[in-house]
Length: 178
Length: 178
DNA sequence: ATCAGCATGTAAGGCGTTACATGATTCA
DNA sequence: TGAATCATGTAACGCCTTACATGCTGAT
Image (tube, rainbow over all chains, first blue to last red; front, side):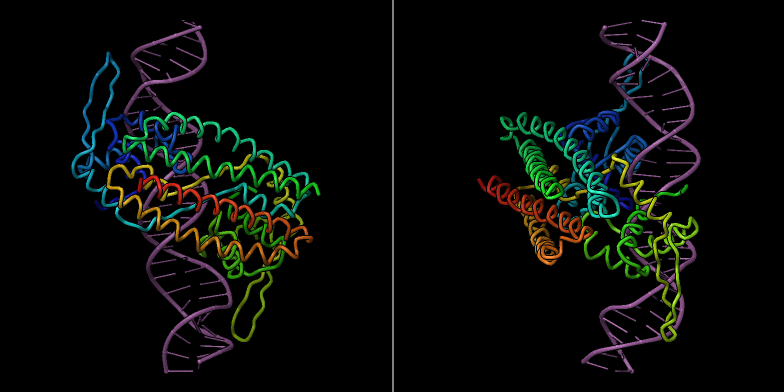
């Protein structure tokens, strides 16, 4: 396990729940995981090959008509690697929050610009909050199943923090007006 | 302005407030900005040279004893570039939150592991929250000055969201116990 | 004297994004 | 028939981190 990119972990985590193609993995990431981690095809497909070389996943091709489809399955070794990563308590949380950079340096321009940047952020947060609330609502009744419990907790984390963001936006806008 | 790395903006933003050396810039980032954006020497020094080539900053060397020191000053062109960036409303907010990845995939291990990962996160948040509260307290009385107002708002953002994180940790821990 | 902090830089490597390249299928 | 979606991949590039390299200064 020389290579240990985080995208490897994302893939192993998803495959631990269900078998997926590279295309499916991208969809799963875009649906839920993108709120705290991203992935791209240029990232996922090479990672799948690396994981297979290391025998952490196993692929099986199926041909539907003329369309080739490669479905991946996690191996025992892959499960072990995932569990080992979960057991390591240190975690690196890196943010690149351009919005906050814009607030922090807003003094270089006028208040209208600062205000507008907050509004844009607010609108984005509002939209994502709706999505997160939908996720949470969908997971609420099935959270007895262990995997879903954690998806529920993650969605809740998003809802809680995004609501805090919105409250902050209100406060900040008031201060800029006053 | 062919090159427009975000680190350029961070540097311009800091220099817009005061003249600084590369070393000072690193310190400012580590003190306050690191909560939403990072920088390293291997990042900052080359960026300063690029900014100077593009005439967005101007350097002046001073020799204190035998120690060379290069202080940077923002130019009118640099201020314009900073203002132009502030005027663009789109902002890319990228997160890489390994902690949330660990929660999301926690079903692959046992509840004790999930619980422990939350506790570790909680402890880190608690420590950073103290720092953010100190910042906010220090900025509170001087926030009439426009630059400080925005530093205050940014610190407040941190305090609010970190408090939301802690509340979530409590909830999550209860759910895992119950 | 020695160690932490001041001060500036370079080089290699890692990891990710974007754009490109290709083609099938489904639905309006 | 044309657009959206399914499906897999490669190549170039961008940007950042880590480690390395060097040397001064001030405090204990």
